Length: 236
Image: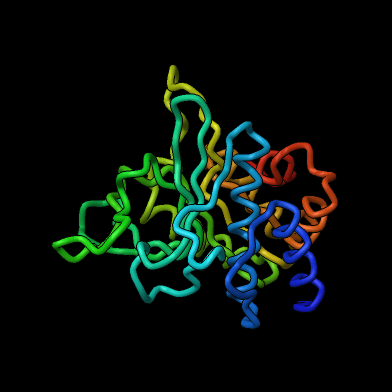
């Protein structure tokens, strides 16, 4: 991974949208998480939402780049369009989708409303987001997309958002959210392409954004008229 080049693209993209992060991580995985966070915010901006930074500290966006710490000590994005309001958090703890009290940390979490994640230290220790308040999420990897990576991702979706592995019920309204997504710097192998076609036949509502740096570059140059989650060929 060309860390210098991706950091350059990130800085250009962030400055374009008047957002300054506290620091751009040197650690490759953290750098990719920042990129995925900006990609998620761009998805909502391109869908007509007004995106603002919340809880900036000393004028800087302080991203949560690990599972440690509480969300109220970091910054997040707020997305508003009409009566709809969502928050985008990084490395957020989320309750699993099977009522077994399992807790998972997702790289990028889109949260319904602005009252589900505490904005200050609560009286009782905050553990994780209620699963019902999670609109969607994204996981980031720097790996080539092999079938086993896809299988691992589907396992994550099964634990956090199992309903996304079923056909959408007739009559339910469409929304502006991207599906649970795997964002990767690597390319898609031929065998993985076959696996994705199999997922589509089974009506899995997930998305795989490979060659992530290419989309980041397009967004930085202002060439993205649609969200990468919409235009990517592997969306299911």
